[in-house]
Image (cartoon, rainbow, N blue to C red):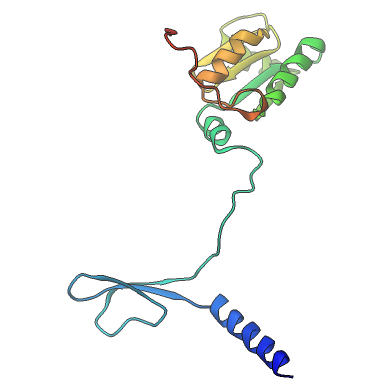
Length: 170
């Protein structure tokens, strides 16, 4: 019976600690204090801090990929007639785990947007933009790799490209 009461006590105590709050305040002499008790009268800059527990980032995309995607979003231009090359382009972006927006050009305004970006009357697909400054017409793996690496996207399999080519000049 003592064991049952001990278990009940520890469960109740654990629940109380889980709901515990932490207080942060500054005393009159400028010292910052932390306590599980409310601050005394006359304390300044009082903050009540509720513990949130440990936070684990469960996002499937790495921080590097999220940052690159935010700073240099990728847009893939395709057309209904583009089958094999567009498939290769999608597979390449997928192999690197790169999020992208696909613009399937089916309407005149889609083609007008393409012309505005690439400055060409004829649409060559697949084409890609990486951020606001990099663009390439047609799928050429080496060129796309260089553009994505420069933007900071992870390499194939989610690995971040490294500058292992010592002495290479841009």
